[in-house]
Image (cartoon, rainbow over all chains, first blue to last red; front, side, top):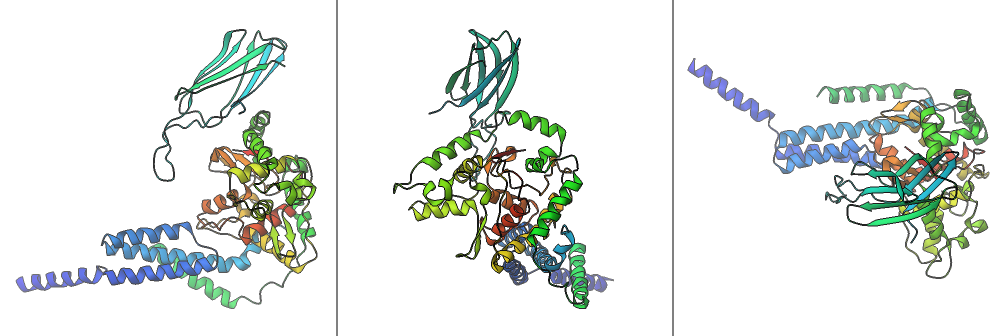
Length: 100
Length: 103
Length: 285
């Protein structure tokens, strides 16, 4: 019984270690988000919310809260990618709105 | 420098209609500038229209009135070519006044 | 978590769809004349009670109550102070003795309806604001902000001298001019920002309807009243100011004033409103 409890405790400890983000995770996630946003910039189609989410990620990262920082960075990357998708698909889709 | 008060008064029979546009920042004191500092309150506190030496319209204003306020009202007893005097005092003690002939 | 997965899924699906899309719609010839006719017909059909010239009043022609308030306000309009400042600025010479009148046809009086125009030396669209700053720089003066204050005052005066004149934008038979016009048109209909609105979403699909508390203006004649005193701004703003704020309101990062995209957009919007009178400077809620 005691052995099971110890094993369980060890498993839980390992599990939480697996979920806790490291600074390296944050840097990687932030870099990916920034790169995507930069690409959106070349398409002249960045979103304001991408910028504010990146800022939130950086703020959390600077404070050492890497779990939040990574989550925000991944959200920012998704927003940036959506803005890229918008720019590329609208190259054709704009015609749907056109007055004829 | 031109007056901050533009006024036009038109007599229509017994009734004189008055419009005025006043140039004034009317800062409420609640708004922050780009640096995050409060812009101090700077607004007209009293606005008076006088005809024949008697007030026909007096307004007690505060921070709720927006920038460059516009006023419109009518009063009885005014005559064509009569003089309407307009003056204001703000919370910093500044004043301005002008007169206009009723058309 | 779910939204992120959903976005990724949507992206993958969409990319897949694009891969199977047959050849893009046949390249269309650029026909501004046909566009102008179709654009004006669309709005006059949509609002049969309005005369063509009424469209330049934006939301005021869309709502009776607003119209009544606006008519009263026009007797003593809020742009009056800026207009007076603009006249003074326009007539005051530069340090070198020259003045704005020297840079413009007809001394700069009654010409606003010709802007923007296509500059064939530049190969680009030139707006009135751009021309004013170029005039300043050519005469040793520092350029001024494109969005408000002095620029709004100057253009308010120049618009005032053109009041009533019909918008008269020319597109020369130059492939670069036609391309600029077409890019402006594409910009107008392209959705942007996280809210995924195009200019058309509000100003073609929903004029007269409300967005939050505001009544939306029709796109036809929408630049004829520029620059405007906007109650929301408690001050004047130019076309650049409006383009920028519209972008950020849809959560899109705005471009710099007088970017190519904005110049082209102004070119398109002005051209399809040809014939409608200049009503600037204007007042808006």
